[in-house]
Image (cartoon, rainbow, N blue to C red; front, top):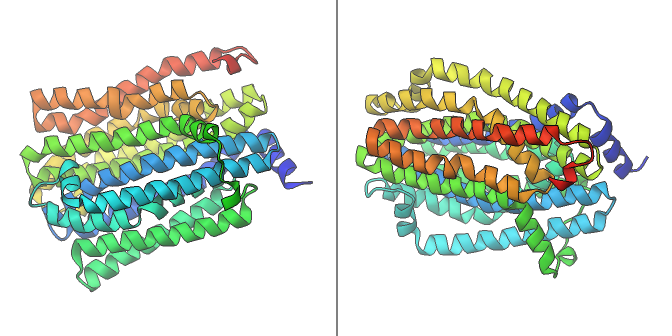
Length: 450
């Protein structure tokens, strides 16, 4: 049996719960480890004071910007690669992944060059105060240096997932994440390099992850990354960007909203920025659990939709929502109960703990609604319905969050900042329900006209 036939049977015949969990668990582990090393940065840098820790929150926004471009190219090309492999078109699949990969490296180089040239104003734009700026510059320089390989890694990771090779994608990210945690300890605790040590550790881990992922892709993937496969056709790039546009919206709005959050938090001091940094890191840890199951579902939805297995796509959506809710609830409920203790792990300052405790409690409530919004958003992206997916992507960090943040902060001050994202998550969850119902009620064979 050929690799293509084995892959077809795996994606169309394996029981859905087993297949989604099999593909989702490596992705979830990858994202958990990535968030754990982000939290390790927050923990180790938190021992240096409020301002250094607040700098990690500022750079969280920059990392969201980098991921926005990476996920657009990675998920856009991955969706098309899955489609072409379902049609047994390996050469076309190689064209999509090669074009996205080298475009990503180019975008990363532009971000690196312009980011370093305008480093201080860039950090201020992202919400840095004058007391945070020296630390944000050190960390930001390292993040920007690793920008091209970070984007390349996300593109490789997404395409490995869409080819059903999530285990190998996991190895690359997990190895880099574990090395980052060790590097934080070594450079901050042993060599006392402060925030710069955390930045260097992050950059080195990104390079190591990139080379591991590139090796596995060249060895394990059905498609290939080749210079000669880079497309000269504008339509290829437009297709990648249009299909991946919802991912750009999700991550891009996350960076804009985080920057706005940082700027609105400035008047409440460095302690408030540090507290929200801790909460955002932990919330991302919870969110990645829901995203992990959704990303495990993406290649299943994309492949089966192209193979006209529409009933399987619908059933997969329900299975994914159930798995996501169970996983998120297992972490969110303890997060609500022990919110004060969790914040205390990262910061001993009573001012930070007081602000972070309530914010984390609210954030955990909001994450319980993610299983309503995340899977259906990923569904429409994976079946190449970018308009609907883009609308859904606009909700959480844009249409719902930004107005909510501005209104609640104006009337409630710091409390408004603490509750704005959870309120946006709850509203996004409810708005997603009609999209779920309409898709599930489509008659067999009508999904292509959605």
